[in-house]
View 1 (spheres, rainbow, N blue to C red):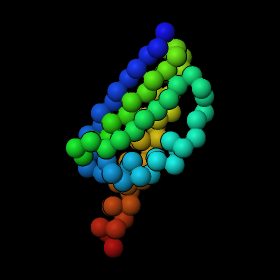
View 2 (cartoon, one colour):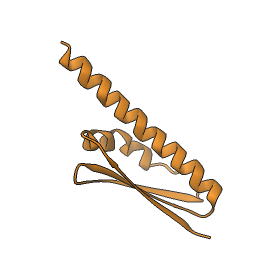
View 3 (tube, helix red, strand yellow):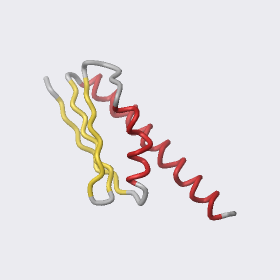
Amino acid sequence: MKLFSESVIMMDDAEAVYRSILPELETTVTDRSSVNVEVRNSSLVMCVSADDIISMRSTLNTWLRLVQIAHDVCVVSRNACNGI
C-alpha cells in the first residue's frame, strides 16, 4: 500500500524555515518513505510518500517536529534582534 500526505503550513518565515531544514533533505533515513519540501505562496508545503502506515507516522512526526523547531528558532532569533 502506498500512502501520500501533503501538509501546507502557513507561516511568516516559510523561506527561513525551508532553508533551515534543507540539509536534512539530502539524507534519507529509510527507504520506506520519502519527503519533499518547498515554499509556495509564503507557506511551507511538505509532501510525504510512504510504503506503510508505520513509516508514514514516523516520517510525519520527524518532519513536523523539525519544522516546529526551525520555526521556534526563527521566532526566538527575531525577538532577540528586536530587543537589541
